[in-house]
Length: 414
Image (cartoon, rainbow, N blue to C red; front, top):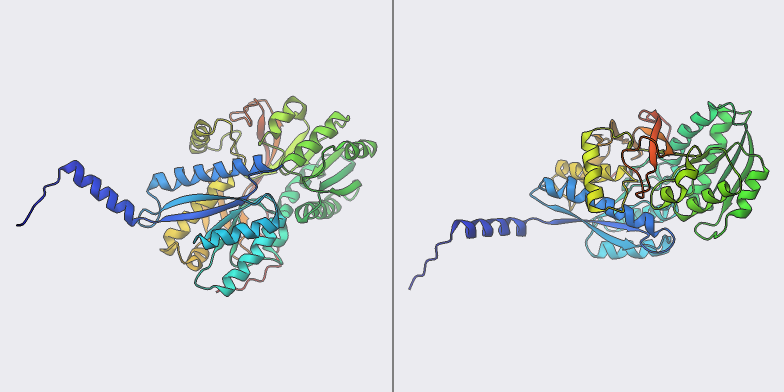
């Protein structure tokens, strides 16, 4: 006997939606960064920025291709290159084809070498490295490879902008350079010496030293040397707990000049400095938060704060990673074969949510974008950091910084 079933409209729609959802795939992005230890605050806030960007900028817009959704999968690397390689293999074993990492150029160097080796040995199982914050210039110079894309301005590009400001201030005659003892800290030091020598050869570098990363509990000995050297300005690439520890210590020990930094904002740093950082802290970074670049950026930040009241959009470039990856996947027509996705990313131009245009330079996979000098302030701040009433405000802008800069990258392309 034949049995027939008539579905109601609601049931039919439910089945249709369910069938569509079943046909859609999840495109996983591995987030490999510190989620425990002294730099956990930076890593967790970055993870939240990735999760929010994926949901708001891709998933709520219908996904990519035939409705495929982005999913951020977190892996704690404890800021260790060795642990990062273990987590990379776990991600690859789970079928993840996109790797995002940013904290520590030492970690990034280990990852980019491992990914290049993996892709050479496993042509049917390749992955892409989306570097959103590791800024050692070597990564897009001598250590460049086709599978690595950097979405932050590198240390040289940022130092070029910072030293323009320093060179224009005749009151600065003595500079003290201090940083973390690993590849990025060394790159910052080298760039500072080079650019100051070119732009202001009269400036005396009265100190140039590195300290162990994540291990200094009391920066007083360093601070006393800085004060004793009568430095008019400090340059540091320190980040996370090391930035907070150094900055607080030098101010408490009587230093009154400007502190030129790469990462002196958010993740508890802004709140900890508060009023004491007013007039001292300067930060070079991409992304214009204050004043908001446009209504879309303001609405995005407000929505982020509604979901993460204790969070901060301290790495605006993460939106570029997510939006540009989505565009590249759509252009390539696939998410599983990363080769056409990489070719789509290389040379891509993108209208940045935070104002202006960005461009992924094809020759070395370095994103070219506007770079801003920000001041730590509590005046006219639309969006503060750490719910502190203080934030960063744009003082000067270098448009499409270093767009024509030289590179030593010699990239083999598949």
